[in-house]
Image 1 (cartoon, helix red, strand yellow):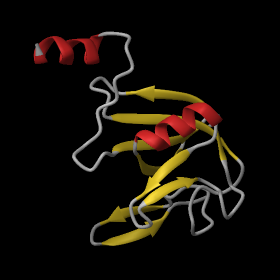
Image 2 (cartoon, rainbow, N blue to C red; image 1 turned 180 degrees about the vertical axis):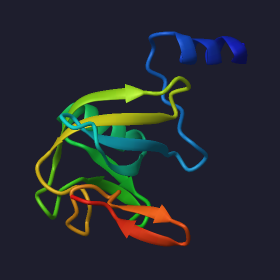
Image 3 (tube, helix red, strand yellow; image 1 turned 45 degrees about the horizontal axis):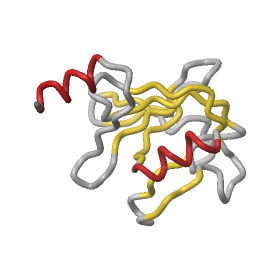
Image 4 (cartoon, one colour; image 1 turned 90 degrees about the vertical axis):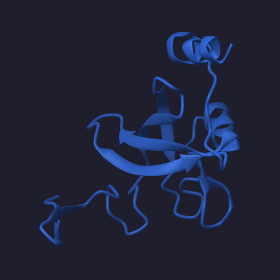
Length: 125
């Protein structure tokens, strides 16, 4: 029976998100126009449901232990245009229109550095 459920989850059309032992799944956020990766965060059931219902990206803040609307304090909300889920439904990609920088540092993306040997190098803007 488990095999049938896994097959349905991986091949079927029923939304059946699989959260980890902490009730979370990974969420990769990409810009709708440039397809640049803006950030990676975590979603629990509540965050996924709120995101789907509101059209604004919500996440689970592990450090705060609560639901978090991206941009709730900065105003840099992310309007979700599409949500894609991976084959075993334990990770999502949010395709968004960001209202401002994605990173709390003020950078457009949280991925603004690359690893070069044992150091970091800033990417060109």
